[in-house]
Length: 203
Image (cartoon, rainbow, N blue to C red; front, side, top):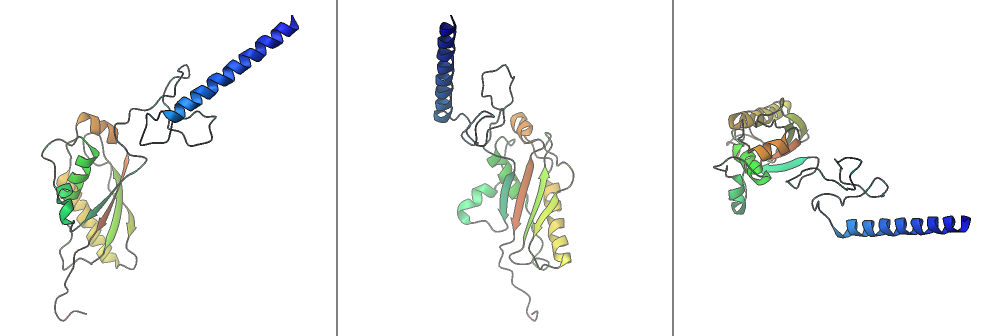
């Protein structure tokens, strides 16, 4: 009797191990979240895609994510864009429905300081989040500024960034994009790549 019980237990363990191996191989072969880490269980060593499903689900389960972004949305805006990227700086003539639409709208909003108050090569980054309605949550937060720049120059650029965003808001999101973006951090790096000519007589 004990021998039969031992044999049954051994067969059950082998079957469970085989099923686990097959399941792991299937997870490695199938990547339903191509823009994120491969899904895995809490027992795996690698980073896992966040799971949002019931403990009774055989899983793995995935959040509804229609756009290829991670924790931050990062965007660089050039004051003088390359000619081959002019289309990316043109505001869409429809409700924003994709990340590309959002980036194009934000690029088209940028109005740099006048050349008299500007500084060639100036860079400044801000971080903020959108509401579902297309409005900004709070004020953009300064996260980076070119070192060695006078305080009044930093203030000039930060004021220009705030004024540019205020002039474009609220952005018109579709329901899907608004729901996906709401509360997610967005980081924008502004680069003043103009060739600024100083007036004659100035050092």
